[in-house]
Length: 613
Image (tube, rainbow, N blue to C red; front, top):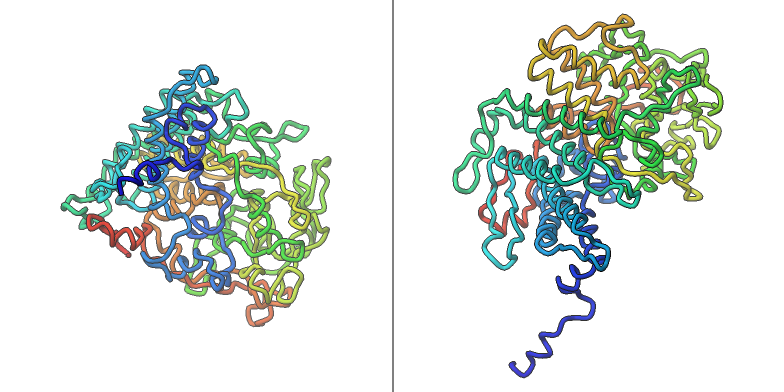
């Protein structure tokens, strides 16, 4: 055996030693880029977004192994594979970041300055904290990985630490990184690299989650302990955590606004806001196209695949990823009022708000025109008056707010690229019987390039937005309301109204729209505003449902229009009528947390699974 030692000790030609990596600027940058690679892609449609109640991939995709459908209907266990699989993938990147911290150094002769090396260390520190925040948000009980662990040692037999200990540790790491990093970079090639604004954005998100009912005094988790008997969660509510969250949101807002970040607006020639184009391009336009609303983005994203699955089937897409009826119901009317106040029975019969002017009976008799350059309904981008619905549109979709039309494609909506109405009827150009047709009568329109052409593979280049300023405003309003409605109502209304003004709907305190009179009513409006403004964005809705402890919203029957309908009719007594609320899926909510993979539970006796699994 000793005679073979020299041969066996040779380094393979295709592997680099740490010295070879960190004595070379290019290799150092590649190592750091590899750590960034685990940042989630907001254009993914097979994991977190459909786990909430906004996005609806075709339920019939389950037969092809589309895993999120199995999760939706409860066919999911610790032995199942979650597409994100954060439990296994993120610790690898965290370990890689610690190796980076231990080895990165200035290389002046290669153009890697001492300042740049310090930035890179802070970036790695940010990524370590960010990945811990993702683990904590989805698994609840997690270990803190404090260093580059020896993979051959007993250190891998980690134990889960108390929830707020992990929160405090992440909070401190983000603040430390923020002290070093700039709020933005002058060099375009650095777009997407960690900034102090990104640090404070993730911190604000984390502290809002930590203040919420799921973890702040939830007695349901009183008996959850780690392997040494230490409680993971506190059963005693700490109201000051809402104040901590509010302060974190305000610090983020102040830093962002002081450094040229702001809500994205497009204006008409008279100086008024164009709400359609503003909302659409707050998502579609890049930072280098003047979109300063983006606080945290993934520069490379799979928008082409997203555009393909959301395009109508008859236009070259697969037409299989839509939105839910409950999201359709959530959008406000153009008068700023909620159309539906709730549901009266198991048949999803809506309780219509009599002040909203909403109806879902019959079809419109005239085109509806609004002030906008949005041209998606037989329009012209040079004109400042354009149609938003055509005569013959189902009344459910008429007189709705601008964000509705930018977010939802319904049956009979105009599809500009093909110069025709969408046809989701059974047997229609975009409808069934295929598994790729929208199973509940809707497709996602938000985040989709209106000019995308899947046939010729033409797609608009854009970033994947993980956090934008609108979320910070709404989070700040929520935290202030939960902490003290009475003292903070003026500020709460200010930030809600900034969102509503950009959305082109009446603001609270004017135009006949009264300010919600107490904390509970304000909470309802903030929750609804979050759902509408942030719909189908980076799993925000799924996270909100969990942290508000509202799992009932993703349990039970899900509704849409009649997939088997062939008639343009809303006659509920006719089985061929398309425009009738119809169940398309029954879901089962199992747990507020994702399960630790069973393989890891088997390997590590120190781990404990959380309730539901």
